[in-house]
Length: 279
Ligand code: C2E
Ligand code: CA
Ligand code: CA
Ligand code: CA
Image (cartoon, rainbow, N blue to C red; front, side, top):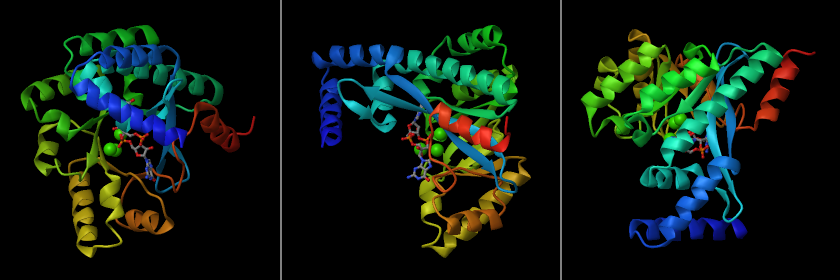
């Protein structure tokens, strides 16, 4: 299929970029160009377990390339990291997410939380905090409505430096979520030393639940520990009713997954708001 072909070509580029030949320039051009008109954000609702209410949405990048078709963020984010383009792409994501937050606030009076993924190179860029302060100055948005998603793997290279930057973010008033918890790098110790408010349990962990009973006991312990550290818990990648029922019974606070909604474009999210508050 065209899609598979597009994927293969991306992988070829991916290989080539590692060998730093001429195609790197082409791909960089494509990605740079993409920031302007081929990237968009989708939004996946995160629901309270106790009610039908949306707590927030996670912003997820989409690249619809004229040349390659739809390219998964799992393919292009690593490339953007490698080329450094993630810095400008990441900045665009923050502006775009804030634009949408303000629009939804204005049109539907929904002050929902926005979850924004950050990547390592972006956060470690020397201008990151300054740039973020500037964004908050010009956009006039309450930073407490934004939760940045950080993975533990991002902290691995330089824990002290990472801790410093996360501290600066907290000082600005934003919230922090620990993403992909349960995927190998995870250690409970980092939770004690880092200023997170939310723990996001990875889909791979949820997937194993029905199969292995021991995981249920582990999940229960993780949730209890998180709560005792004043963290709220999101279960990611909930696809089926049984999974929803199980994590709900274990005391998870929020759920996110195809069971409730896949990531949706802006207008589809607005349909959900309209159904809830008829105008
Ligand atoms: P992530 O942060 O772990 O995001 C969750 C991924 O799981 C998303 O994939 C989402 O579409 C998918 N997902 C959600 N619910 C379900 C479910 O029930 N079943 C299944 N099978 N999948 C589900 P997506 O959108 O392809 O994004 C992949 C990864 O790309 C993200 O993983 C994140 O690491 C990265 N990414 C996406 N947008 C951004 C961004 O703006 N900045 C950065 N730095 N990374 C991003
Ligand atoms: Ca995420
Ligand atoms: Ca995740
Ligand atoms: Ca992930």
